Image (tube, rainbow, N blue to C red; front, top):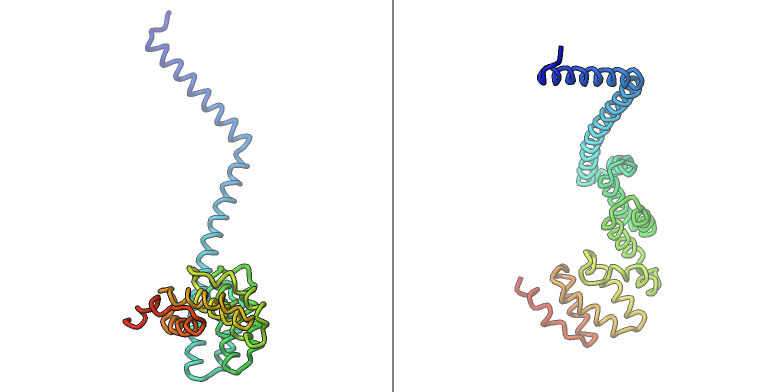
Length: 233
């Protein structure tokens, strides 16, 4: 008996479904263990990542509390307690807390007039390639400040020249040190021009700009008009 179009379509659909089931059965027979293992590995990796992230947040909170405790100890003139906490934090995994602890360690040495020791700590931060560049740049400036009197002017210019440009976040501090280095090199024109740029930069702190106006004037650069707004603020 011939099949009607409807019966033929139903038969073909049944055959197609049977072929799919057979293929799936063969696939899972051959690859089921591999797929299952891959899923388990993926789930384990994801669970491990979530645990790691949770631990990171916990550790960051702990580090933050320890840093605040160190600052509180410094406020109470308990340097011994502060130094103990800072020493631990200086090896922390979180960049921000580790760096702040190292900066604070260097500041403590500066308060003791240990310029050499402080400069060494700042140099360590400046040379740490795992840190963000702004941290490293600030450390380089602090290092240069700590050992400025012992540095030759050409070393200052070479070290800070790339930071002593308008638009750089540390232009004021770096520019002032480079300008003074120019004076020590008897490069009055370069020094005057740099002091004039500092005086006209509204992002530089007012006290630094006012010093720059005075120095620029001594060097024959009229920077008073460039810094008029510092007098009205």
